[in-house]
Length: 273
Image (tube, rainbow, N blue to C red; front, side, top):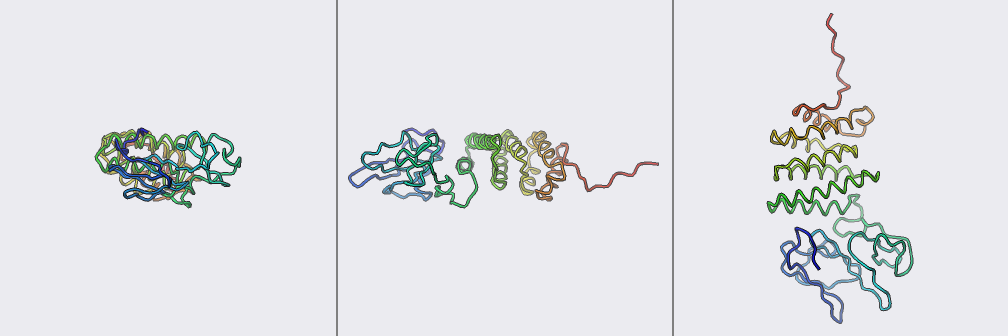
């Protein structure tokens, strides 16, 4: 099976079966294999429900009892039956094994992220790809991964889903690093526009890093900085954000000549007599 993924080696892993079940073997891949979020060493015996991570792809291993037809696919977007725990495609309404419609929430099933995190694990996986690509000096691979991240954020904004502010700031910060590595401001522009549409303000630390950008990259941020300023230009919106970060947004706007958020605390100028 071929996986189109920059972190997957040409010969990455093998899953074989014998009388005792299935075995997963790492074929000396560059980035390794994870089972339920833990790095695998050598060969590992698979159990029903194990999550096999290869690159950014996560596959669910299923042991199907005799006489029960397996699901058509076990990768991609899955539901997990709350009754029998069988994974099945999201578009299927009821579990094909027991007929139940109750499901386990996806974020509680991922060993890598843990049950308490509110982050979208799909976004987090792509961010890991981008980080890995940057560490390997493969800036264009990082650009492609961050572009997909921004696309997922935009889909969630359009669907009126709540975004996690910490994760959005992490996306903006990673897009900033990618922009510098690739000398391409497009990903940072996209990330800032997504933050503005979600009405989420990045942290003061992230804005400080933007102030240190080369002039050409910084000047390219005119439109998204003004979009952020507009999103946080009212008193009501300011009640929900860090005023220190808002001040850093103003500093960035001043540095690139953008219209920053109006400062309602400044007194009116004295009119000349």
